[in-house]
Every structure is written in C-alpha cells, then in structure tokens.
Image (cartoon, rainbow, N blue to C red):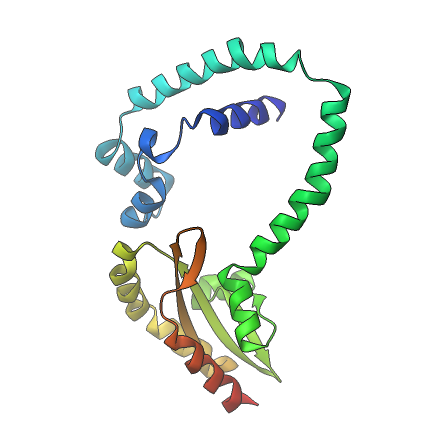
Length: 208
C-alpha cells in the first residue's frame, strides 16, 4: 500500500499518465464499451499505445522516484507536516465541499428542491438507474451520464436500448426514468439537456 501511494504521488506530479502521454483514456473506454478487462486491454493496445510505450513510462517513473523523491523526502521538516495536516483538514475540506455543490448531483437537488439518493446496486443492474427521488411511496429514476460532446449521440442511442428496463422500473415503482447528460465547460460541470429538469418537475407533481 505504501509503495502504491508513493508511485501514485510521483505519477501525478510528473503527469506520466496524462492525456498527452497515454491518450484520452476516459473517451477511449467509452468508445470501446468493454464487457471485460481483456476487451479494454486489447482495444487500448491496438488503438492507442503499445505495451512497450507504457513500460517506458514506468521506467521514467522509477528514475523520478529513486533520484528526485528520495532526496526531497530527506528535506521534510516537522513544521512542514503540521502545516500540511492543518491545510488538508481545514482549507481543502472546505474547497472540496464547495466543489461538490457545483456537481450535477448538487445542481439537481438545488434546482428541484428534493433529496436525490444513490440507487441500490440491483437497480443499477436491473433497471439502469443511478439515482432516485422518492415521492411518497413512488420513485423517480435518474441516470446521470458524463460525456464529451462527441459521445452525446452514442448516449442517446444507449438510452433507446435501455427503454425496456426503464419501462419495467416505471411499472414497478410508479415514476419515470430520466437521462441527465453532463458535460464539462471550463472547470464547471453543466447539464447538457436542461429541458429534462422541467420534465422531472412535472413528474414530481404528478406523483404527489
């Protein structure tokens, strides 16, 4: 565990797995839509970078850890450690809280004025529902899909494929299932299909 932490910190510092080094992995895996790890491994090695390329990045990481990190660790003082803990607990916790409010999840709760809860695993598997809103004894299903502009068409097609499972959810729990597509604009996450908000509001009123 300690070894993995050291490697992870060094990797983040020197950006050895950033997009310019290993490709847009988040976009690639959506394009691949793998069912197994082997599917993803083969797709990546065929379409992005070779195993040898990844091994070379690993060798660079080794040099960074053994030459640079080792020397820097010896310079850490007690005061450095005290300041780090204080900053992490006070300042970064507050920053993280503010950031969380800005997410799609937080935006929806604020706009709709209702509590949104994570769906149980069986709903995710059986009905393709990520979150839910409870209205009395009825449930509205939500599926939040983060995507770049280039994958919005793919997500819309996926929605059509999942229509039957969503209809089963409605038949059992009373409420419809809504797709929320989120995209990143600058440093913010925004709802790409804001018209869905009015649809959800109407469904909430219907179930009251």
